[in-house]
Length: 584
Image (cartoon, rainbow, N blue to C red; front, side, top):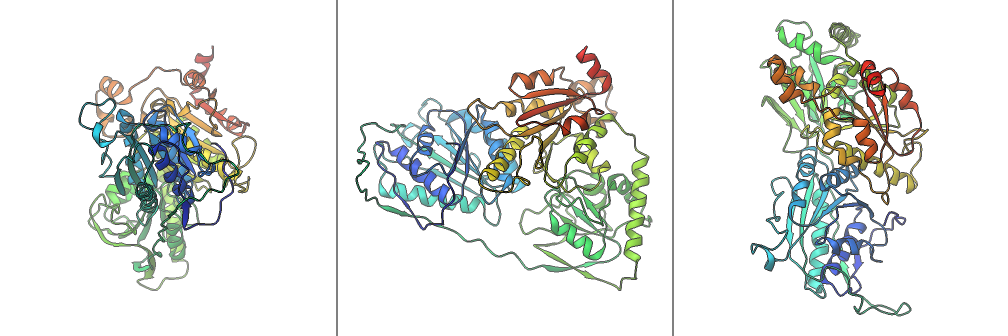
């Protein structure tokens, strides 16, 4: 179940499944067949009995190995692996499958992230049939609608007839699958939840009526619904002038770069914005904005900010700039859940084109950009540096145009926002909720998706393995984030292993809180309840879970990053004195 056949031309029909002697398996075959035909490529499954029909169905001839299966012991890791697979190419989302009961609760964090990050994710939870609900049956809880506030679509699909699914039941399953995938990948992408009730038998019956191999089988066809998306919205003209800045939050993309370049406006781009490049980029803007917004008469003070994506990192941006009474805020977002934390947006438009408010003197904008860069360099130079920052910058600078860099939600991403320059790498972070849940598993899903793309015939220069060539995937996290998702490293011996470098900056706890308002807390309280020192040997823990593990310092990190590895590798970065002590 790890290989896929070449994609076929779109079809308006699928064949009804061959009888299996189990209505649950019949329905599951129809469900997977429809999803495969509509473009679903990967499914991540956690072990369980009630979900067994979905497992047996993946091996059916009708599915034809078009869906690549991955197995994870931990349901949370399974869900975030599926999220990573979906992130790689949102037009081909992945599914996560669990059995009933508490297993379903472990999906919640990934569903929340998918909702807030607008990443399509298909959630399939197996359940008891109606007659076994609310009567104390084992592993039975209220699963239907448990993600309703987050899901683009939530359906409680009734259990099919025990021995053989009826034509109506099969048609209902296929129609529901088509509607679910359309909702997940539509104009407002996100998670969908299908709660699937199954009756015994949960496995195919060997004595079920099976046709001879040379017999001509005439099976009923089931119509397959396809939904075409809406065309993109036309751009809306918005005013720009010499005191306008462009803010690129998480996922902003090339549109932010294009607007700022066309009008030569300062570009304030977060690391995971997809816009941290171009001639108008202002590296080091957080410290500068803190000064600029504290002085109403500062010559660089903006009077208008055009916002793309989801800004989350900098209080100087989210609070001081976008929350200032004298700054006009315009948000560019085609969705109704646009980001406006300070509630000061005057206008929200689905797409944008700039409209100059006054003649632009030759060279004026270039001089203005130069003043921004010089002031930002001065503000950054006055800041203290640390070995953690140097380690983060080593990873950033090692990532090129064919690489993917995944960033955890820790102090490291803020170090990069302040100190890193432009990058051509694809940078991804779970900034929908800025949580540390499932970060390693999500990065593993990204790596698996890229390798699958390479196997399907994509260029190895863009979809290569971690070892010895272009196309590397790296995850940069702090120690608490790494510990929180240790099961993301647990890949069974029969599973495809992601080609992934996990770089863990181990400074003995959560450094991020020292930079927030908690820095003024009593030292003992700050250390125990916020920094939360762990005392764990991260390299030993990673090795115990089957990963190649190395201890390095910030000085030896660049050489280690350039080293070859074909699998899952963990680089634990420690200060020189700590590393020497640990190895002695």
